Length: 232
Ligand SMILES: [Mg+2]
Image (cartoon, rainbow, N blue to C red; front, top):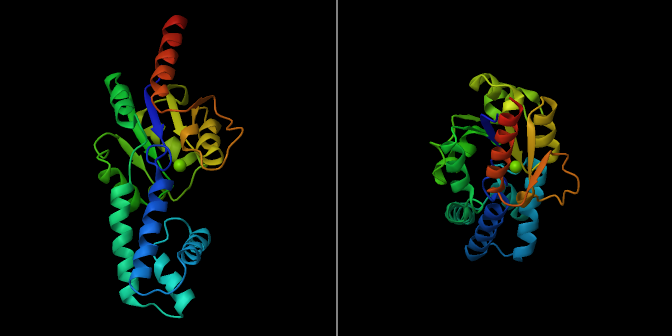
């Protein structure tokens, strides 16, 4: 009987990649408008190089790019980029289709919901609040809450302990096989690969289930519940 569903956040509930690209595009255009005399493609390449080096959540990305291109930070250009980035981020941070209805359907079945994310705590909560999801999860665990990233078993075990459930009563849904699927499967949690959020061209996810739309989760949960009824 499934009692708890754990979700990864970025590229599983939210289309993080699309949000990031829209926000970076807007920031680069605004910096050019404010006087940065480089081709937009060059600036974008610099931005993504910094993200590759420092991590996708790195907050000082435009400072760093300006330092690299100009030898110093021009604060007029920096401010233009940051403002455009924030506006575009807010506008383009969206849920995948059927996320909200799926979460409600799971809740109607008495299933408790959790998030396990490697994002920094503040960023994760900001995204959840922007998306009006902050009241729907009984437990949200970020990197800052455990100090460990998936596939470490620690965050998954903490969720099981919090709800007092076993791995066989829990589903994990995520888009990153090496982190989301491997980490949960090690504890015996049933795994679901969010194929719709795949940005790596994953061939073999290693998950028990694969979904192309998050709403397919409902059928998986209902099937698992029926199987359970049949076996008791
Ligand atoms: Mg993810």
